[in-house]
Length: 162
View 1: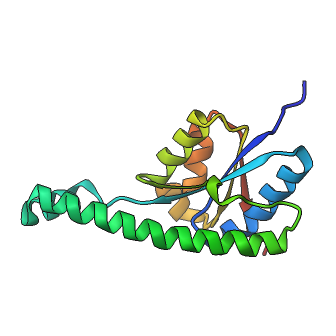
View 2 (view 1 turned 120 degrees about the horizontal axis):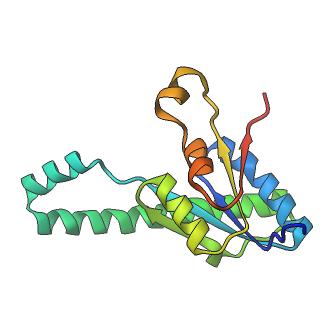
């Protein structure tokens, strides 16, 4: 039995690699008549940094600042994602992206991507990779590699051509 691909989760950090990966997501969506959802994850500060800032400002004030900053940053990211969608719509006219298929999450990218993929019932995750390789990749591991290892949903990882 061949897999049905009806829902694609396209995870982006808005880098050139991610832009290149979108072409693959659009091609697959067109071929299978699938919907694409865009996910961008805003990374949180480390727990140590949060604890220090909370201690300096007071927990209530720190939470207010965090929420206001996230709301403002989300607005800026949404504008960038909307612009990205317009550019991709022009480059890939066969694959139109409705603006309501854009999600901005806060947290750890690997966790947010895998959680969204599983909870959203997606058939495929498409994402770009920086593919730095070597010792950096061996010591830390890339987001794409960790998503691939942890996801129960198939993941297509796209590198920029040389």
